[in-house]
Image (cartoon, rainbow over all chains, first blue to last red; front, side, top):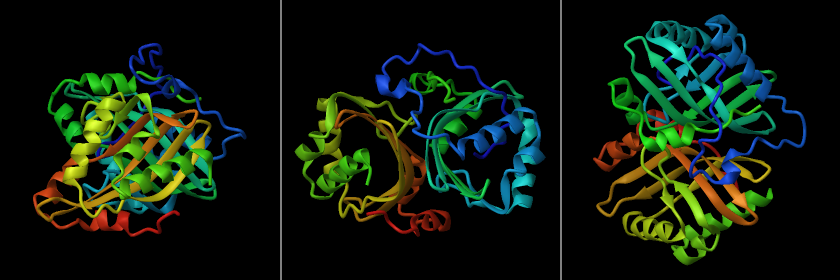
Length: 175
Length: 143
């Protein structure tokens, strides 16, 4: 994303899924133990602890971070990712980044979630997104996220969260 | 090829053939389709989906809808691809996206595509594809 996410583990109010189909509220039904998702959980935990180096420990030196659906150029390399994270951290007051669903295929982890946070200025931002992480061994070598950047800008500017977004993020967190 | 992905390939083939009825045959009556997740309200129900498809049909030409990667987990299909087409006034639009489809039996009951409509708006205004979009498009296509 275009903003750092120092996330706390989120606890989502379930039961407010409204019009989402029943299947949307299901938990991942993996037939085997996930290998990659625990790494993402570790990244989340590190961000929740405001531990940027803890995040970076899970990415390769040549990480490519495509965090804007093609709107902005990719961030390349761990050093640039560190700069981006450190620059954005002070803007975030509270974070509730969370993953609703995921699937693994080889070295690839697909995820669906929301980047929800409150800025120090008080704005409440919630960006539903889907993305893909590519792994080399146990580390992330490429990170691609897809979302609508315009709704992010609108909410950062103080626009209220829409009913559509509220509905989309009222889902249980993947275990 | 997984069960869900095989059905999805039929949807793609139907859309490339401009066969709206065949696309609709793969949707549940109560489908909820977020065709621009979070940016626009979803369409709910097959009748509303039919109206949207007809509108798309008129706006999108030379469709080259491509999938780069996918994975399945139970009744959910995760995809990463690009919507690539030419508008009626000749502008190329290529929007990289990721999506999640949910199945009830063989029918799609939930469909959420995450895409940046701002990227599409720039392209519809006549801007060339950006280098970062070109990078996302420059990948092998899955069969």
